[in-house]
Every structure is written in structure tokens, then in C-alpha cells.
Image (cartoon, rainbow, N blue to C red; front, side):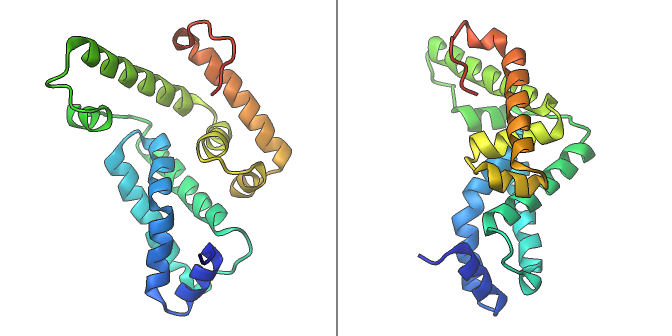
Length: 192
């Protein structure tokens, strides 16, 4: 399998199929990453398309100085932060989207419907807690814990040191634990 950089170099020389391969390889992960900022599937897909549009526009000037995924997440992070600021942090979740994300509960038994609603409440609580974190803590946690990027790559995305990323992750986790205590129900090991 070709590396991302090899595909970008092929795309740079005019091979659109190489760019398509890059999109296929990273699209789902990018949408999931962006979703952690937007809490809205449609907006996440739109922003992911915008990220790839920006990457495509930059193909001719691309220089493989960093790992491709690091560059991709840096573009996505900047776009997400701009989008969050522009929207004034207001989030609207429609009933249709709730059913899309948690399953259709029209024919469910009441205990299953209660479980679906409870999962939705927890998801919203986690989203709100993440959203309330300072920007660098939020991005560090999402990239390290959810996207499983190494600290070194997160440091490149944020333009800081590895030590700073570790500090952002630690502080963010402590704030999340504090905000989500009502949902943790006395668990001894909080794995956020």
C-alpha cells in the first residue's frame, strides 16, 4: 500500500486517482474527528469536504515536511475552531438527527427507548463538557484520546511542545472528570 506522502506526490503530478485514494483513506476518520467539534453529522461532512477541498487546492504547493495526517488534522482543526467561533457555540440537534445517531426508537420497548435517551444524554453531556474546555485542551484530548495520534503529531498540529500537549491532555481530563462526575457513578478508574 502506498504511503500518504507517495499518494500526495502522485496527486501533485496530476494523478487525480491518487487524491481520491487519499480521500477514501481519511474521509471517515476526518468526519468523526470533526463531529467531536460540531455534534452534527451533516455539518461534519460539509467541513470534511471543505478540508479536502483545501488540501486539493494546495496539492501543487505541497511539500512533504510533516506526516500527511498531521497536516490534514491541522487544516481540520483550524477549520473546526473557526466554525465553532462563527456559530457562537450554539448547537441545535433535531429529532431526526437524534434518531439517526442513536437508532430509530419508534418500535422499541420503553426500556430500550429509555436506554437510547440516556445514551443521548450522556453523549450530549460529554460534548458539552468537551466544548467547554479551553481550545488547546479540547484539541489535545480529541486528537490524543479519540483519534489516537501520538503526542508528537499533536504537538505539530498545535505548534507546541510534546510536554505542553501532555499538560493540555492532563488538565483537560481533570476538567472533564469534574464536569462529568454525575455520570461516572463512583467508578474508581475514570478512563476519559
